[in-house]
Structures are given as structure tokens and as C-alpha cells.
Length: 428
Image 1 (spheres, rainbow, N blue to C red):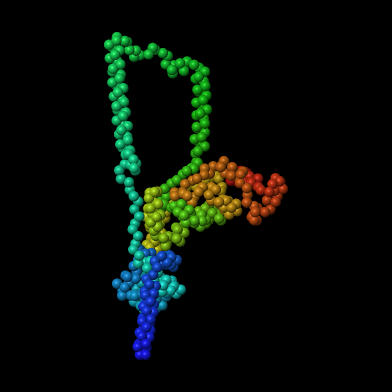
Image 2 (tube, rainbow, N blue to C red; image 1 turned 60 degrees about the vertical axis):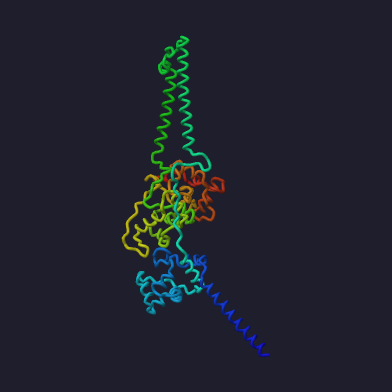
């Protein structure tokens, strides 16, 4: 009977130890953290002020837990308290919290009380991951080689040797034929009978001279007219800007609306040059591009990170705040209409609902911005003749649409039918 009680007690102790062991191991596993989830949490909560490898509004966070433990003797409990409410930690007089607060211009860190211990563990696991190796574009050495085939240099050498042998053979054949002619006493004719030169025969034919003169005059007039018609037409103009800006990345890959940067296009005659403050709305947090994007830049001969640094130098940003040492950027204008031609962006963009790509081409595909359309008078007139005005749900055109629809007997009206071909529309 005693033996049964002893076994039951031993079984209960063993079960209790097993439960405690499982709980402890589960807690350890939970504290290890998931770097994949940590990256997502870091990007949504921390990336606006922190980077992993360089200071920004806040300090760099690569291996932050290990550094705090080694240098300051701070553990996970301190980190959790700082993340959830840094202001409370500063008010308590914590020495390191006060030091960080003063070091970064007394900028208060946003509190994140909603983050659980596991969330913080995941983010710390992400910050503990080793830095990725820099992407280096492969550089080809030597001449072009056809993989799996014969070298181009070898093929060219063989062809050169073949042509040299043919030339030598022709010289030998020529000498042999001359010797054979001499042996047989055959006279070799080396000069053709004198004939009237072609140019002299042409000059003596007055009809051909007249026809040629007429053709020459017509061709000259055509090319002179074409040359002067291109004066002031800068289609394809693609200047190099002081700071490289990729519309392909911003408008294409990132899908940024044109009117976010060129906001005055909706309310003004001109589209305007974006202020650098608009750029800093994003690049205050984006000081470098992804390795894949950086590798793409090698195809265009551009270092995107260096261009972002040019932006920082212009606005006076040192990574943590504005220094006040700013300088203007001398942008080069691309689209420039003559002074006697009037064009209103707001009339076309806001009222007419014209897409930016209609005039400026596929901007979202352009690495370097260039003038896509000729912007000539004929080009504008053709657009006015062919484009129907968007009058649906557009109060601006309600009354005039009713009157002109009756006049022309149509439901849709082109810009030309609404007076878009009148000289005073663009010249006054």
C-alpha cells in the first residue's frame, strides 16, 4: 500500500517537472523572436525615425540589444520600458534615457504601449540579423567571348589570314598571266580608247542640266524649309540635371502621383518645380535605396545613394536634423513654350481631365526626363480637333455644352467646336 502511494507521488512530481520544463522552453522559444515578423513591425513602427546601420532622427539600431548589454549593462526589461513609454523613463531620471534624449535634440520618441513582449522580441531579432553584403555589379574583363563557342578574336584572325592568302593568290595569278602573254608575244591593252568624259557629256546636254537644276532647287527648298521649321522644337531634349531624379522609380515603381510633386498643375498656369521640402517628406526617412535598386542604377551609370546625399547637402540635412546650411539647386528646364504662346495647366489637368502622359509621354518609364512631344502649334491644333471635351459631371461646361450641342447636332463636342482653334485662345 505504501509502495503505491510512493509511485503516485513520484508520478505527480515528474508530471509537474515536465509541465515546468515545457513552459520554460516555450518561453525561451517565444523570446527568441521571428526576424521576418520583426522586419514588418520595424518598418511600420520604427523606420520613420531609425535605420539599422546609420543614425537618423534616432540612433542606429543594428545589434542594439547586444550593444546596450555590453556598453550600458541594460537588459530586455529596460528596452521594453523604453519602447513602450520613453517619456516615463526619462522623467524617472534614468541616466541612459536622459543621455539619449539630450543627445538627439530632446526629440521625444513615440510611445508604443500596444507592442507585446513577443513583438519587441521579433523586432530585436530583426535588428540582430547581420548586415547584407553590398551588391557589386559584375565587371567584364577582356574582350567579348562567346560562351560555349569560339572566341571572336580567333574568328577575326582566321578571316584576316584568309583574305591575305586570297590577295597573295591574285598577285601571283596576275604575274603568271603577264609572263604568259610576254612569252606568246601577246600585246596587253592597258589603256582604253579615249572617250568623252561623262561630266563633259552631261554639260553638253542642256535638257539634263535644266532638269538637274530644278530638282536641286526643289530639294534645297525642302531641306531649308524643314530646317527652319525645327527651330525652337526641342523634342527629345534630355538635359543632365544637377541631382539625378528617376521618374521610373518614383512615378513607375512607387506609383507616386504626378500631382503630389507638381501640385500647382491643378490650380496654376504652370506645373511648378517641386520644393526640396516635398522630396524630404519621404527622404527624411529614406537615405539609401534597396540593394536591388542600387544594382539597377549601374545600368544607367547612377549611384542612387550618392544622389540622395546631394539632396541632403542642398537642404542641409545631416541625418538627424537640419543644419541651416542649405543651397539652391540649379534645375535645368526641359519643357519651354515660346513667350507668345499661352498654356494653362489647370485648365487642361483639372477642368479638362487630361492625363499628364498625354503631353509628357510615358513619364513612369523614364529614367531621365526628356521632352516627349514636339509642343508645336500644329501638334496642339490636332489635339484640339480630335479630343472630345469631358463634359459629363463637369459643371464648368454644362451651359455651353447644351447650347453647342443644339448648334452642331451632336452629343460630344471637340475642343475645336468649343472655340479651341481661335487665335486668341493661345495668343493674346
